[in-house]
Amino acid sequence: MLQEIQGNYQKIRNTCRFLLGNFTTLTNENQLITELEPVDEWVLAKLDKLTVYSQENYQKYNFNLIYQSLLHFCINDLSSFYFEISKDNLYCDGLESSRRKQIVTVLYYLLARLLKIIAPLLPFLAEEVYENIPFSFGYAKKESVLLLPEIRFPFPTKEQNLKLIENFFLLRQDIFSALEKARQAKIIHTNSQAQVLIIPKKELKVSQFSSLNLSRLLLIARIEFTERVPQNDFCEEQNYLVKILKTSSARCVRCWNYEELKEEVCFRCWKQLN
Image (cartoon, rainbow, N blue to C red; front, side, top):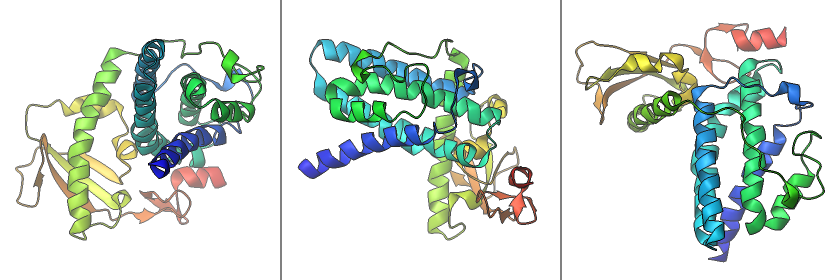
């Protein structure tokens, strides 16, 4: 029991540590931007729901419900998804990259609101995190984390973007199921090697995904929607028919993505190195 609690505490702490570690280049509020990607709006909307849920349950002294919902958000929504798809941009994009600035903006608001939720449950952790914020504007550098004002992203999220990401998760579920089968069959060794072919089983509007960088959200090499008559080697999933191939592209030695290369690195990394 104590080991489980210790492990869960460490997961919440590691979430805060990831946030702090990616603020080292954030020096002023002008680096925060207002235009976000749908996936950014989705995670902020999830944070809004968590905040409201926590406030309601603090008033009722339902601390265990707050703890469970906080832990679920840190593990499933952040560590297993949003942080994972953000690492490539955070670590490999240039400091002036608009996508990197979008992610750092989201992380800025994530930390502020998570600290408000964490502080009554884990005051020593919250104070430790707050004291180690590496910037000195906005909500940072007040006397105590307990004096933090309510901070939230100043623009409303768009309902169509939230719906788009929910539909994306249905696609993601089917693709991940097929990827697992492909790894077991030794077709690929890692998801990043996968070239994915998709055929919708129903009248699904795949054009809705045109605004998303699906390969980066799925952490695969390439994805392609097709209307060809399916062959036997397509996996039949819940909403889609999925075929997994191993990409013919080589792996970039800098970002480890499978792309067209120039001098052993992809074109994005080549620009950053030259």
